[in-house]
Length: 486
Image 1: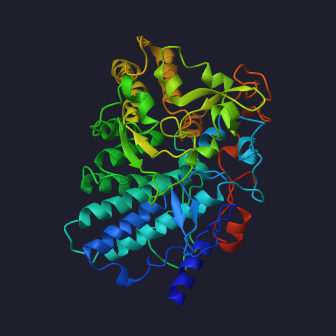
Image 2: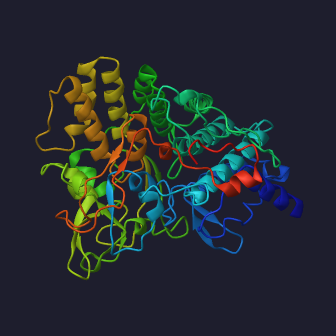
Image 3: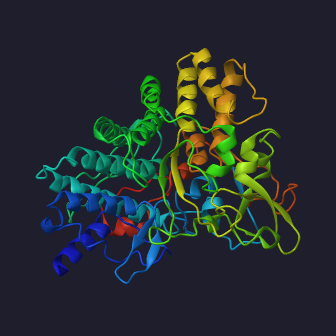
């Protein structure tokens, strides 16, 4: 068993797993993922796939301690917050603790990298998925096809997140597909030294994994696990990022869950309902039990301690009759009486403010917005408006409609920004559209006063749209080529 511990630790180091200030990233990964005895019965494989899922939000160490992971609420950054912090959706609050200050101001470098935890745990998830897939060849239980599908979908999700941070997105620029991607590892090799392959190759591998998963996964695998709708939604997003418009439409059309109606939108974010949610990870005592919302703020509104507030520019894009303003933000004051357009997503259930709500990974509204964007790019403005209005009619009392040409394109992009504010997508949308990050010179307070972000513009051509591979990772894996500019 000690030899197994050693091999898995070597994998974590050589595969280029970087370190961060998250809790004990140098701990050995879960020791049951590497023994033939771990995968014999159907129950073993069920436990194994649950272990793969667990890395999405939380790692549990041998001493019982835990650390947030890929979607966890880590102050060091995660999918929950960093894509918005890198973009124009939030403003750093001076009353907070300056969490993710380096990311927000694009001051990262090879020697001062960010998202070490996300990088590390994404590859741990990949290793767990690959180990399960390797043993699945000899498994003949009736759940085999579904478990293999889940493992492939999870491997694809982890690699998709990684390549979008560390590589270009295919539609970002003319040379994006030939640019450096990531290492797409498909074997549970404990001594691998993987080199980065091109963005185009990575995306093709992701699409293949997801297409296989979509064909074999159960329609519903229960709470905390993906089913058909979730996989098809992710596949649609992948095709959209690839510029394969018709494929994006076809995959999105396979999503059967309807868009959440206006009456349910506020309750989705306080866990009163799961309307329109395709993939939801419970955040409960004994399951995950994370105060994920502290990435945005802590404390009750009269004593709010905000880390970030909704940017003045974003907040004022919400129309008065847009239910998302109430669902996503609230008016909160700190002990000095300063008022903020505080972020409500992740704040808590009901009237609570402990940051404990379920993790919503995929929602049905995205399928319609993917269709709208893809139809527009195919020249089908009527189809684009129909899909766009499928979301707008469920968000506004008097929804806008009827746009054509560039106004329609801009309306689709606006609704995507509003729908997924503080929800993992804004930075990647700007990146794939080839647009800069442009922040207003307004502060964190509700009226736009206060202190503006230190850096206001990240040009679309900036190399900093691709994060640096940490020097520590490159020291342990000489085959990891650094991104240009660092």
